[in-house]
Length: 145
Image 1 (cartoon, helix red, strand yellow):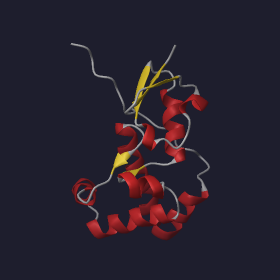
Image 2: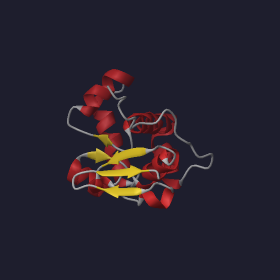
Image 3: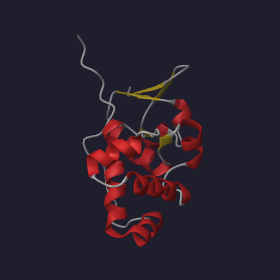
Image 4: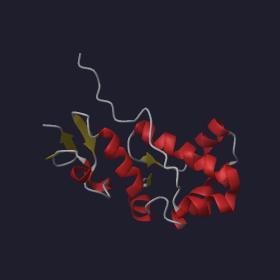
């Protein structure tokens, strides 16, 4: 049996100079805000370049990190308000992702032989980050030559 293709990352780069959106988040929520967004980035990158967000996600996250569900919902809404996550993809597909998340994902994954992605979720062009493109109808597979 073939080994399943890895979609997530074991690590992700964290910029030393954080962008103004993260500074706004940290100004509003303090160290909690910074820690919480890093926790969300870990969850996103562990599975790929987006995180499916349902009505039960805050409840599951509450169990994992011990923060009240209402605070998690407020935090996500604020992240959407200041464009840490893409509002359009969130309202259309209930996912958390952004251009920055996708850029970092493709930069790290460019050496992989194959990456499966949903075309509808893309905010950037993977080929701009060294990933070769091979299109299918429902998914896009990126293969190295």
